[in-house]
Length: 220
Image (cartoon, rainbow, N blue to C red; front, side, top):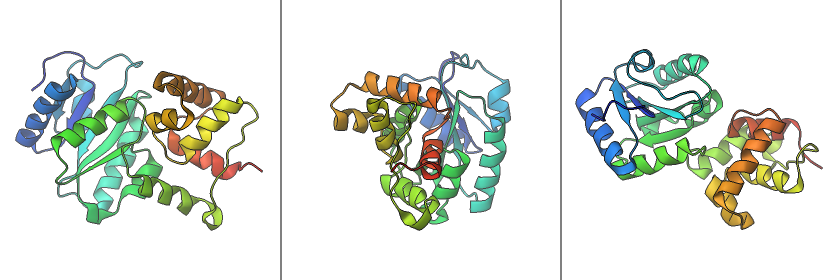
């Protein structure tokens, strides 16, 4: 397992041997410190967590869990989550079709049975940088399902600058920070600064909340 430093990834589930191997791979591939525990409660009460200003990703092992069992755990844990904690699901069976319900609860990413360790490592880094790890189709389907008559959403927030409104509109479309940077021809750090300002100015805590706000307050 990873060295006993500040742990930014918690791998939660009963498949200890498999999860230990994944933790070792992630540590080597990303430099992130990881810890495996049987429960989220155990992860939060043992080891050394970073301060609340540093992001922590909790990976919930969904192997052999039913649709309802996964959602129950997600709902319970996200109610107790600290502001710097994100939750993602892995070893997820695609047949569960759980993504839209999980996104609405606050899950930030999905890793499926058969996903390569390299793909998981890439996704973890994206989530820790503030992005979602979910297919654009699923994110758009979630947006359209929550939008009357499936109409696209246009954002016009008077408290935001022109550029911030542009970033918010692309964020609502489901684009990652990198994709927004490429679309607007600006740097990735600039996008992250804009996103932080947007969330602070209009009191958002997640990208999904931005989508819901855009639904409630569409532009002209």
